[in-house]
Image (cartoon, rainbow, N blue to C red; front, side, top):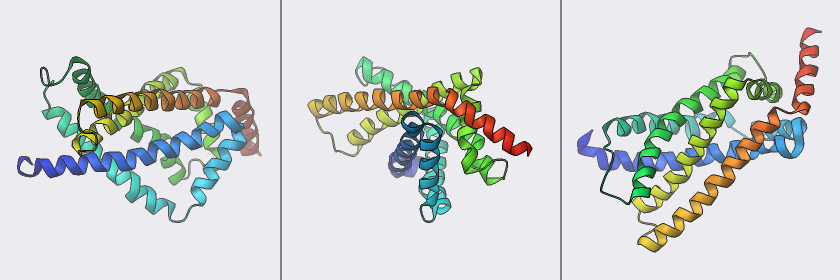
Length: 222
């Protein structure tokens, strides 16, 4: 592994940026429809995503397998990494440490979330049309709501801080000024995207989704 660690880390970096960006954007846009349009808006977003051609293939090879490599190799990097004390400024050293911690949390959270949602659709325990009710049940479970809040914040931080590091490591932001501006930009992205996801979680707890879940329960009993 050490002999080709440079290329492995580059692949790890690239496969983290592309699928994680797609995963964040896809979920951010579709989940936020719960805020904008309630159950109907969320359902339209789900139906649109699943109407795209070759969705299972795109998700498998464009998101999940790259994320699996990024996550597993990221755990290896986190296990081998030092605290980086003295190499960077105090703030960047904290960012380095939090990137490793948030990566572990994100890896667990993403696969747990996929298990609760998309995997349940795959094995036939639920349908795409019932995902809004599934998220309502999850968001109204105090333990799950707390864990989802932690997982969402960790995932968005890992994405935003990872983008900052990606731009540095690939020679796009060269020099202190460019890196400082980039840190401000990605800090704003972190705040905005986190707020968007948390607003979606709160929306899933709302009465509209409760009523939709109640209607679904009645239909299931008929």
